[in-house]
Amino acid sequence: MLRLGSIVAASFVAISIWQSQLWVTIDGENAAIAKAYFASRVEMVDRADLIALVHFDAVKKVEKKSPHWTYREEASGTIRKIYKASANHQDMKVNSQIAVYGGETFICAQTKLSSGDCLVFLQHQDGFWQGANWHYSVLPVNGNQVKWLKSPHSREFAEATLAEAARDIKTDIASKHILGNLPPFLAKLNAANQLADEHTGEAPRPQEEYLAYEQALANASKYKKELETIARYGTPSGQLYAASALWSIDKKLAKQLFAAMESSRANVFYISGCKGSNSPQGEIAQSLASSGKYLNFKLTSK
Image (cartoon, rainbow, N blue to C red; front, side, top):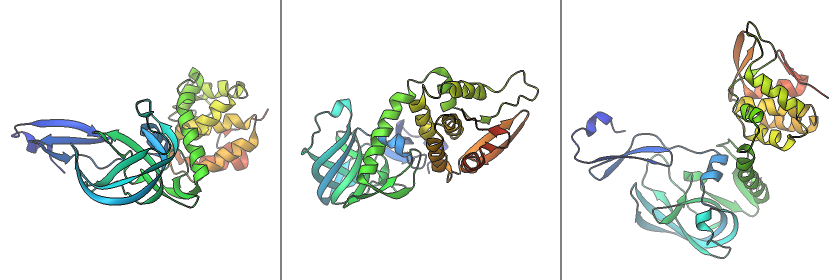
C-alpha cells in the first residue's frame, strides 16, 4: 500500500478510479490505494457492456498493457448467445468473434479465463474486452450448469442452470427500470434504512418509513410487481417492508420472498417507539413468515 505522504516529491501525480478502486500514478508508475472491490450480481449486470454465452477455443499467454496493469492471458472465441449489449456495442452479434483479456498483473484480483463455453460479463475499456468484475466475469458452463450468484446482492457462488442464470440476468436488467420509476412512497421503502412499526413513542406520528409502508399496504394490488422487485433488490429493511406488504394480497409469494432472506446476515435496525435494536435480516424474515410478526411489527391480511 502506498502512503499519500510519500508522493510529495514526485514530479507527476494523477489520481483515478478503476473497477471502483482508487489508483495513484506517480511518475508513470501505478500503485493501488484500496483493495479490489467485488461487485454484487446486480451491480455486475448493470456495469457490463456485454453479457453473453461465449465458446472460447483456447487461452494463450500475452503481454497486453493497459494504463493500470498488464494482461497476461487472451481467450478468443465465438459468441453463442447475447443477454445484454450496451448501446455502444450493438455491433456484437451471435457468431461474432471476440477476444477477451485477463490474468491481470494485480495481486488482489484477476479475471480467470478458460476454454469452452463460458457465461461472460465484460466491459470494453482501453480499446479491448476485459472482465467487468474480476473472477466473477467469466463463468465456465459445464453442460447446462454454471456456478452462479443466486441472489441480486450475492457474492457467493451456488450451482444453477444456465436457464436460471439467464432468467436472473433478465430480471436484474428489468429491475433498474422498475426501481427508477417508483412512486415516492415506494421509493422511500426501497431505500429504507430501518424497520419501524406503528408505535410512536414521544413522536407525534409514526416514522416516515412506516407511513410509506401503510401506503404500500393500501396499494399492494396496484403495485404488486414493484413491491416484488423491492423485496428482491431493495435495502434489507426495504425488502422486509415490501414482502410484508405483499403478505396482505399474496401470502404464498410473500413466504417465498421471506424464505429468500432467511440466510441473510445483513443488519437491520428495528425501531418501536423510542426503542431500537439491531438484528440480522434473516432472523426477522423467519419470524415474520412463521408467526406473522416480529416483536411489535405485525403482518396484515386482507
